Length: 381
Ligand code: GTP
Ligand code: MG
Image (tube, rainbow, N blue to C red; front, top):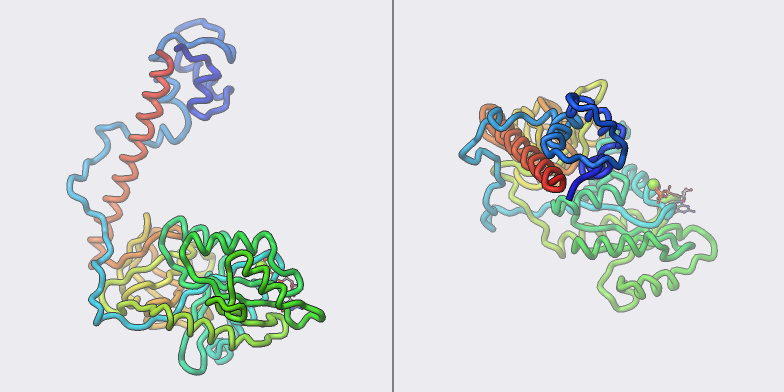
């Protein structure tokens, strides 16, 4: 089947005007007057259009320019740690719930509950996560990225960074659309839910009604004979927040959350940005090993020799054990949120990994492009 100018534009996902412009070069020796419906008979011209079209095509090197890496030089996670190396680790918690049910207020209140933050005057910076440390010494890590977005990103990567979802339900509103949506997401990711019934300070709230409608959506709390913990709180008045955090540490114990604090570091990038004051900064949630200054990390298309570690409240820290979020400085290239972080032995090794990943993505791009080209020419014939 022959392709019209419009067909070519559609196949290449380009504006038709772009194809007209490109045709001036691709078919410069003919005096055909092209309209949207002009059929292009010569497949060579389609090939030319594809070649000239768009930056993606221009960026791709010719086949002979791609250096073929024969041996796989990528960094890979270490094998599972032996059971005797595992130590309990704090839970990593994501707060979800319907609009205006009090997620932000709750996170803010929790942040201020932390004894650490009180000691350091609460000089908080936004690094996408923070830890609440209890007087008992136990810790809970909260992911502080806009609920749904963070959770979807984590889920998409299958990183399983979240151990527990705190489902915030305002007692005056009860179960709403995004409450149900959050339940569905937690279920899909196989992450247990802990319910925080919020706004209990409001007059005339009906907690039983909220519990019943949660049960109708499969979240059966202990009060109704189920196994889901529910805590009644007021984020605004800071009521029962310690109970909530204790419930979370209990949940962590039930789940027997453990990690090996030794060996190579593994983690996930929560946020990455170019900070005008400190330069390339990324927040890393450590999932295995202990991150220290001087560690060499690779993550996505980025790598770092760790120059400085900072906790969420801006204190420099010497080391970050499993489940702790830290701000990492020392990136030569920034990674992206969601990238897996792996420690490697040397800068040389990091460079090798970067080169390998670069050549792999080049190869992928090239394959995509040759597919687009062959599809376009095939249709033109
Ligand atoms: P989105 O980010 O828009 O989804 O909302 P959110 O879930 O973060 O809610 P947010 O914390 O912004 O709270 C919404 C409103 O509810 C604010 O006006 C809060 O002051 C109020 N609010 C939050 N928690 C409580 C509470 O425990 N009691 C009362 N009375 N009001 C609360
Ligand atoms: Mg909010």
